[in-house]
Length: 317
Image (cartoon, rainbow, N blue to C red):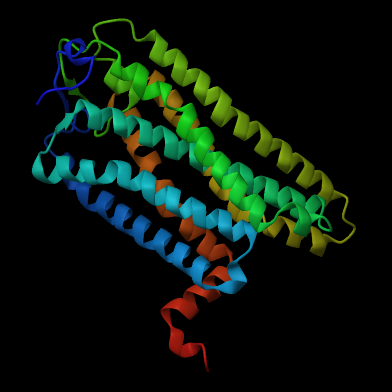
């Protein structure tokens, strides 16, 4: 294997070895079955949601259009990591080239940023629907959904470029074994022989700007929503308004709580290295599997769409 380009001489390590889950290498392959089930259920459920929303005219509304974009992002995030993890567990295919590793770092950051952006768009959609219902049809349109999606792609696609670029500029001259199932930025750069602080600082700034910024705006949106709901005279109207937000709130709480847990466990990672690595893997595979389940159980229109797609014979009865 050889690297092309002007940075050829910069690298001495030609490939990384993904060792898998720290401390349980001898029996980690037993985890492949539940992970494979999670991955297959994630892909099939998100594909079902995307096709249902695309084929069912009643679901051609902004909230469902954002959900269809979330389904694509979830499939992309799960597919970025799971095939390689299963290859490690099943075929002992631990080697990964440097370009593949840096591409995985980029894809993970991009997809997680996209997921955060979609949650923000969904929060804004609920804010306008509940706080400004009369203006909703003119503010949240198919055109605005398309523009928001393009903006999300550009923002996250461009903003995270420095992360893999800075990682690629490090000097990897000693060990090439990563005690992880995937190429995480901090895990990879911990092997560098030179100063990796620029990478850590860059990741922290991007996390604060993208995730922190999105979360702040989501909290503001829901503060206005709850304020508006409390002003309603009818308890039934308030309950109905909040029920349209329940699925979204469940997913947001899980997504951002998991990120906080990963950050906290990473700080304690030196003593218990398995915990942050396992949480990191699960955070990239559980939300893609959980998102469609939450929406399917809590959204009647979506359930009816599933029935029409999967049981077309009932359509004409």
